[in-house]
Image 1 (cartoon, rainbow, N blue to C red):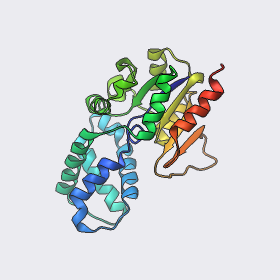
Image 2: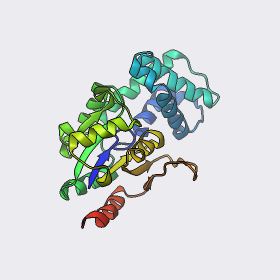
Image 3: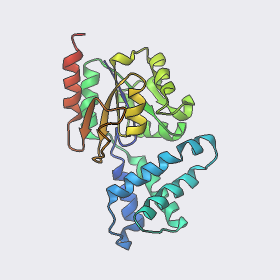
Image 4: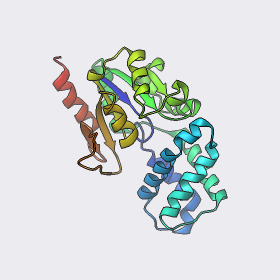
Length: 240
């Protein structure tokens, strides 16, 4: 049994550094908007232009401005570009103090103690994502060669190509592999269309149509135990 993890909003709660940056930059304005809603919209806009950034058609700063200004605009709020930049600077500073979600730490410790293979697949610029992995001290559970970053590999989720790279690099089989991630499009769809099992880390209580082509095998909602899900799967597969 192999457990492969996403990074952002999976290994750590991305809303924490986002919320701190929001309160620092916009707290005095009393916008009254839902922080959770703003965050989800920001992530959607980030995903929307991910390929443009990867190709070099949009700079990182342009993407940062785009995602937060459009997220606010969806809620009827216009913010100036300089405040979008200030927000991103504060957000980036907060990401220098990341910590693994305690629920994830429990699951990671169990997986390590049981001798399971543990890896990481994450989308994003190579150095930026590598810095997050370092901040989270993931070397406690994951070997450096088992960290796969789209900016380094040259393929991004949900493309099955990056999942194939991981299989080859870690010498693992799809039928024995479970991918934990928060994004339905990148993580659930990416894993399922690659023949992997999917554990959807649904922190923000999102929904997917019941008739969607790809459905996660397990769903971990905001207050659910990741460890319990991993133990359930381990109990089913330990004898195989």
